[in-house]
Image (cartoon, rainbow, N blue to C red; front, side, top):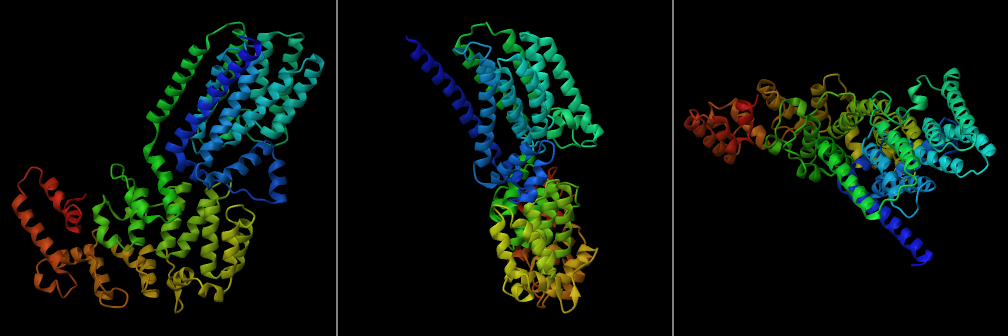
Length: 586
């Protein structure tokens, strides 16, 4: 076989190797983590403005961060997050492979397998919402700088490159400059090229300068954020997993130089690579947090108001409080909360609206719940809280601030937020459309805004109170056409077993324009209140089917009360009733 044919065979092998890795990464990411990318798109807002660009690029590591933000805005497009992440990881792998091949046999797949190892660490990081993709872009820039340095034949020129490339990398990538310095130290120590000792000394001096100079200039307050991978992770959290990618990179550089004369068959390398990939993907799959992954999926449905999807995908095996909050909102938006609420594992009023736990995702849930119910002040409050929690702004919460300020009549404030959203790529059309509502006449043209304004403020009565239940009562009085407030207010009383307060609400508003008819669970509560007066049930709004169902429930209570599995027996036929919740739920 001639040289040309051998060379082509090697190229095809390498192309297939990295092509298969790309396909496997893409299928894995898109199949299991598609909703993670949709969620990540909301974690920062990229603006197309000169001021934003200059402010970003002026910061240490600003170029990598600016490019990361540019691509992250496309994560909202189906499949883009998986494609971009796979391409970025494979690009890093190919570049690292070329670096290793400069000192190893190009006819072997050993450099490719070694280059694949750090990608496993990077892949794990990309599945963590607290990791910034800025870190991987900075890693790519580090590989480029390594290639420039190692390819330099003139040793005196390489000395100037140490200072220039380290400084450049610090400016465009940030903390990754320390990985660059450490990698070259490993390379020079193992290769021992001419003047390697002066090169190592210069590397250490340059690294030490950029390690301490930012502290003297107050550019950064902590050493770990200057020269460690912590800089690319949520700074309040433990960033130990970030060290694996850097450590594996230094390890493969060392191995490449130590085994540069070793010949290993390609098929053994292929088997080793895919066993490694299978092990890593299997480990990720085994350690995945199903509840957290569903939280991202749930957030996507909530954001797009896909109420049917929320109900259909409810994970009954993991009924977390935030998931129940969103589920109950979906039921209420479909006018089904009063009929189907107890078909799900409710546990007190916290399953309607829970206390905010300080997280961004919970702030978005709370803001959406209060907005849909009509409590505009609380919806605006949690939008603000979420923006404070989000360090890179949040377009979704800015949209909520636009909506709530328009409803409240604070048009100049709404215009300020609209101007920001108009500088984005995917929200500018929505923002421009909101300008039509920046007046009282404009609001009258929007059914949603007009309805929510009526609930929030009607006949000089504001639905604003520190007591959410009082707010709900004023909302239903201000706007009887909207039943969300009534669904939530009666739901609070039923879930808290506050039948006396439910009776007060019933006596005050039933058979008025505010409350015309009873839902199934409300009828069940009325029977619980008047169980000794069955002749009054029909007059009180209870239907014949609910009466019959209670008759069967009462009979089974008497017949089965001595059963050892009494609660389980009753749950089979009556677990979706308020009576069962009232008597058996703790």
